[in-house]
Length: 269
Ligand SMILES: O[B-]1(O)OCc2ccccc21
Ligand SMILES: [Zn+2]
Image 1 (cartoon, rainbow, N blue to C red):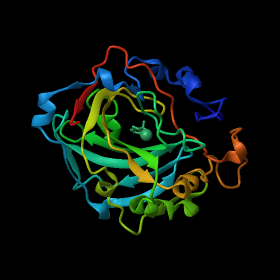
Image 2 (cartoon, rainbow, N blue to C red):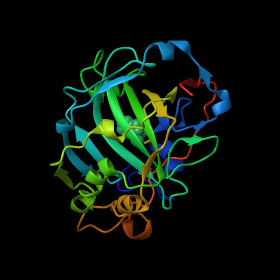
Image 3 (cartoon, rainbow, N blue to C red):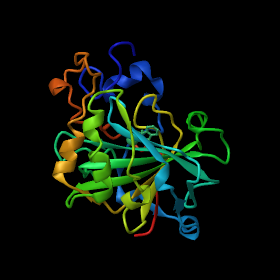
Image 4 (tube, rainbow, N blue to C red):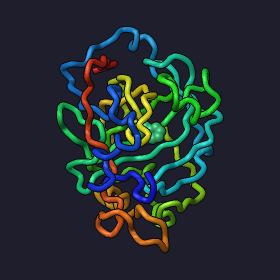
């Protein structure tokens, strides 16, 4: 899209994306509603526990992408293996999706229920591809660990992100992450998950993601969610192109798409 770049308002939001990004109208799209009755447990998942290693010092910069905040990571030294995955995946970045109030905001829903937000840890298949950009073009290129966030106690690890938000208030702004953020500390205690084949939930919506969505939500406070909503979707000095309330990024989640004939598997209760 030209000036009217994609976003989350009526004018440029999820229902308009397919115009410029035809893959968004595909049959392997994300997010989806997790209909727990449809999930099949799979002994092969149980036999290969999910295992990860992250290097907190490798969380480099946080940027306001115009669609939310994103922490970019130096992939070296990280790895995610097991579960539904073949080969080794490396962490590239993590980011979050939220809503204008905490009764909505997650991208995946569970039996129709929305959560207040959803964290995405994006990994790429380093066994087969040279980098994340290349991997994003292949059906087995990416895997995303999804963590549902519900309102509760202040999340100390996410607070390190919140503390940096004032310095990336406008689109395009970025800053160094001085205090290392440990992605492992943002994951739930129990590692039960659902997994299915899907896509990026933002344009170009590549159908290259093996989704792993943890069943157990993690807590975040209302104040922390309010901080996310203080990000602006336009560049400093420019005027706001979106018709959102004075360009605040109050909501950046894509509504669910049909699972269709895709298999939904689960590991753990
Ligand atoms: O769709 B997402 O926001 O979650 C998965 C993903 C992967 C890469 C970029 C953006 C995303
Ligand atoms: Zn995401």
